[in-house]
Amino acid sequence: MSLRFALLGMLAYEPGSGYDLTKRFQGGLGRFAWQAPHTRIYPELAKLAEEGLIEVAEHGPRRRSIYRVTERGRAALQAWMEAPPDALEVRSEPVLRMFLLSALEPASAHEILRQQIAYAERKLGEIRAALDDAMRASSEDGRPPFGRLAAEFGCRQLEALREWATWALGQLEDAEITPQDCETVASGD
Amino acid sequence: MSLRFALLGMLAYEPGSGYDLTKRFQGGLGRFAWQAPHTRIYPELAKLAEEGLIEVAEHGPRRRSIYRVTERGRAALQAWMEAPPDALEVRSEPVLRMFLLSALEPASAHEILRQQIAYAERKLGEIRAALDDAMRASSEDGRPPFGRLAAEFGCRQLEALREWATWALGQLEDAEITPQDCETVASGD
DNA sequence: CATCGCATGTAATAGGTTACATGATTAT
DNA sequence: ATAATCATGTAACCTATTACATGCGATG
Image (cartoon, rainbow over all chains, first blue to last red):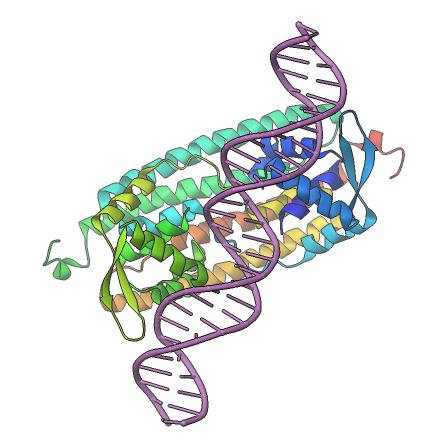
């Protein structure tokens, strides 16, 4: 249900073809917000056009169709953006991994936390590089890059991940020094 | 592909039936890491059992089957946890909303950011309440609540959201006071 | 024995991934 | 002409959501 609004929003910012949108999902800052292959994008564009939320603005070479949002489309986007997000988004593999840490041996948990820290650093680098690219590209056309705020958001989330993982490492070490379940460690297993 | 490891991990911590796992996904701290209805849980448990990663430890009243992980299951979980997470998780409705902010009128963007701040506050309250519950419940059985670290992680992510939204509001106001695209506002539309 | 909650399932539909296919244009 | 890239699509499959169904066991 979100893909259609992703498309609607990108087209509201700037008209384009399915091919253009595919590239924006792959290459631009959009990839830090949502992902979709062209095989999902084209059918969704067709549906949006059928419902009158977008329309073909122009035909290009090959079979290229450049879409733009209609008034109704803009209204639909606005309505969706204003609708209160009520369910906490909870299908995140990184969070799941962190959730399951307690199911592992402490030594593994340490190792995995250190991996998470490295991962956060690496992804931070990626986003910052992408942001730099986007800033440079957009300084030519005068307006700030689409998704700049979202990229900053991504950075902050990753920084929070890094800080949390560092903190969690400390927690695990504390728990090993002063285990509260000494009395229950009889069987050994 | 992640659901199976969510189940494996929960069973590694403590054996249980599909019904138990359903409740853990709904009620406990698990709901801040992954979500699944029973209609997905039962078939996945069947598949895991067929592959020998879990097995029936005990049969209860009604048709209740209590599963536990096998050695192979534990190894599979370990391997998955240790595998480097390589793709940045990017299908998040909140992030998408933030990404699309630029497609809206500034006044709407303000309103939506304020909503996000309120949302973050509300969800922070929910997680903290759930964490308190879990702490109280687990103080009886001696070990820290499963998912405590993850709940803390969720809190930090929400705090980052709140801080970011506050910062973004400031950015939008700055952009309105000193718009860099004055020279291009000739056509009006 | 009626009802409530436990415990599991099926079926229909929607959303998403991967592999494969194809024609049109530009570049060499 | 041939290759590369643009531009779009189909088909098979997997994952997830929603609605509906059912039978067993405890409780009053």
